[in-house]
Image (cartoon, rainbow, N blue to C red; front, top):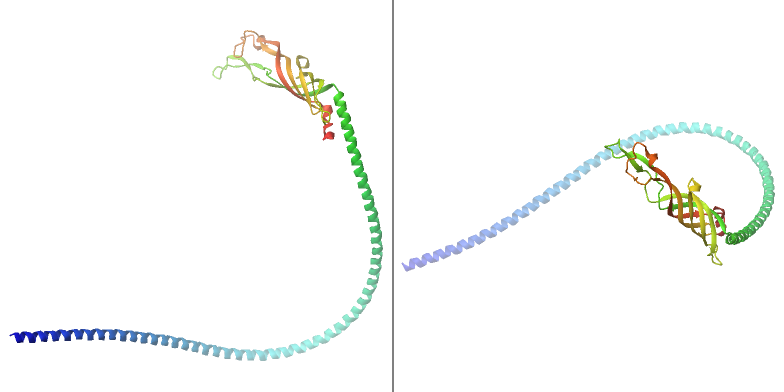
Length: 338
């Protein structure tokens, strides 16, 4: 029994060994089959590539045969055309020969005409040479006159420069004389504007409100704190404030003048300061007559049936002012000093 088990074991192991060897042989055959399949596929691809190349060469060969046949046909056509052109050319040569003979006669005539033109050209050249010679003489005369003119222009420029110097010296002398006259001049007539701290009232009757337009109250159309007035008058110089070497004069004095349209009811008086010869700054008191409300009335009151004129009265009022005025007579001397 033990011997049978051993024999079975040996038989089993032998079978196992054969089975493993078979598997190995099978794997080796499988790999060889894969390699053969790859080689076969590569061979098929190479055959396909060769077939494609052969087809392309065959196609090119057919195309070349077609082009060769076409070229042979064109050569035959060109040969026929060349024969026709040759015949035409021979005819044209005969025509050109006839034309050349006519051209020879024309050239002979033109040659004779050119000789006549050469003679005429020589005559004109001689005349032109005489004109150029005369022009050259004229240019010399013109050049001489131009040099003389330039000399006169230089002399004129020198005289003009001298006149400018003399004019500048004259202006300087006149400016000094004017400055000296300004320093001596005590009374000057000046004009300009004055700003005062009271605005001329303009009284009227106006509705008290938009809802009650029938009720009229006293209103001032010209309300405000300042008023601008045109002033004119005289400036009396009292103190000379000018520096010895200054181009302009400065002084302090008194201004007396009038303003507005009613000159005799609008007076200005106060100190005056002159700068730059012609510009005056004035300040002081303004005495003027204004229409004022009678005592007991003020803006917003109702004047009653008697109207606005019954509540107005003319009164004198004193205000402060500052003025900016010009001496127009001396204003024209400023450009000569600058």
